[in-house]
Image 1 (cartoon, helix red, strand yellow):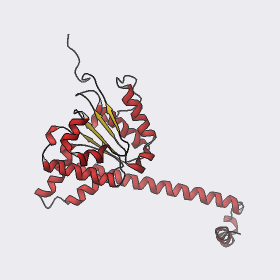
Image 2: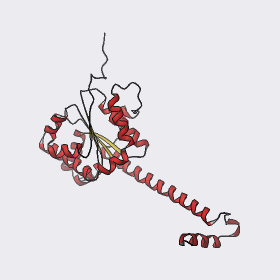
Image 3: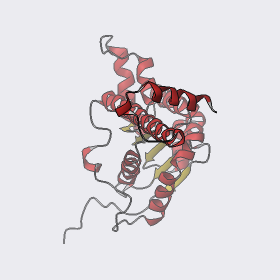
Length: 246
């Protein structure tokens, strides 16, 4: 007889008569297994909530900007069917992405729905209890720089970098020419590097073409961001933000 069954039967013998269940040892084992599964699920949920809370605390705001909290992947009015198809596959295969760190690069003209799509991915993953963080490249740089200017901020530079390694998905928006200085590239490269080492996917959003992004960021960061099988997705078209006034 398995030792765990003996232990359960021993517990049953010591229970008051009225409290003894009318279950066989095998049935009781199934109940214990189910309770263990529920306990493991609850523990995983609590860990995810803690990771998400730390991501929110880093920026002092919600993970997803308010404008995009309702973004979803099932919008019938999408003008980017190919990009949305890739996005849905990304969500469906996210557990596999976490084994290799493969992310996405969304690029195209201003106003074609890149940020909306990225946040729709994030919302879908949050529904599956994955932790996510959205920030612009400039926000990321400012967070690290804030540690240099005041020692009483509560977070060291190491702490900030570590926080970027907490969420399972990072959305890094507005990768553009404004972050072209060496120290800004260094900060973003460090963030990309720590996530790459931990097989954590990153979604990069830019108005620049991939070749321009490569020139801007350099080989090392570009490789960390789009290596390991990442999709590079063009989202062409005219801006959706401004309606024509007749």
